[in-house]
Length: 235
Image (cartoon, rainbow, N blue to C red; front, side, top):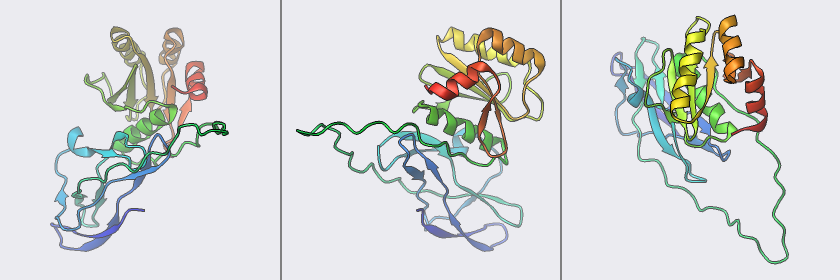
């Protein structure tokens, strides 16, 4: 469990205690940022992707992943970004070599998906990234090219689009994602908070693009057959 540290707001000087949230790595171990109790927090004035996310290394398996930078909302209205220390290195990997007279343990199946509640657009992106990692895409990162709507994510052989707007996704958005993925010989998947228009769903079915709706618990719900198949089989 992460350590609770005192945080003093630079605007109103009030002090509160904060514990960095943990997120599940693809291996199932919790990953949390290490807070620097000796450094002062900074007020968030402008949003930028590189500042909203931080690369953390899992202490169990050594995987690197991008996770939301810990932030705290002060009652005075200031949003504080917490300073971090260098994360700890990976622990000793388990010995998976076979021993004489023993058989490999049977695979017990995928762990239950654990997500984050969606309150902001950043939460929606986090939920989608967690889900993709749960499916088996271990190298989820920000896409190089910005999509027509929302935020793009990428993994090896996959492009994803996360639309946190209050308007249903349109056919053009789905088609643009599909075309971009085709030029990179990659699969694609679409996540939306507000759902999809009828033409977007029909176009996605024609192009076999998986469509998911993000509920407020952060759990993606399959909308079409392609999404249901992806949810069942994984990456």
